[in-house]
Every structure is written in structure tokens, then in C-alpha cells.
Length: 118
Image (cartoon, rainbow, N blue to C red; front, side):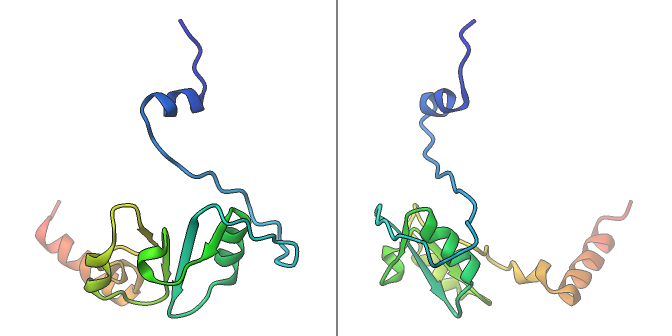
């Protein structure tokens, strides 16, 4: 039996992935290395995410269509989801606020309990 490593298996099934290293803790020594990966923030900036992306070869993109990763703070309009390309990733999914807000989560759990009794 041949001993295959994780990289060999992923190569065989043709999965593309990015391996992120942890942020070093200082944004002063980050050298931007444009590898073609772009990110974009909307409705605010999260410094930790920004520095982690930059340490891993991402640069800030101009428009939404340029970015591989979109980071959005707050509720996202459905038009944003509809404009996403297949390769783009976003930090929310539709209606994620339904589980993030405790009052809405309680309402949804109550509905589920009523619809699916034991």
C-alpha cells in the first residue's frame, strides 16, 4: 500500500486551498506581497483580519469584483450575494443575523420546538 500525504491526496482530487499562517502580532513588519489575491472590507475595518490577510499575500482590492474575500460588518443586502462570483468568499451567509441576535435566535428556536415536538 502506498503512503500518501495530505498534499498528495489533495493533488489527486484537484482541490485548491489556501493555507493561512497566524498573524505575527505586529503590522509594522508586514511586507505586501501581491500574489494576485485581493480582499475588500465594507462597513468598517477589522484590523486583525486585515493584517492576517496581508501577511498571507493579500492586498486590498479596489472594487467588489476584484476581491477574492469580502469582509462585511453588518447585514448584507441580497444584491451583494447575487453579484458574487463562484470564486468569491464572504464572511456572512444569507440571514445569518437570525442566529447571531439572541432575540431572533430565541424566536427561531421556539418556532422549531413548536413545529418539531419530541
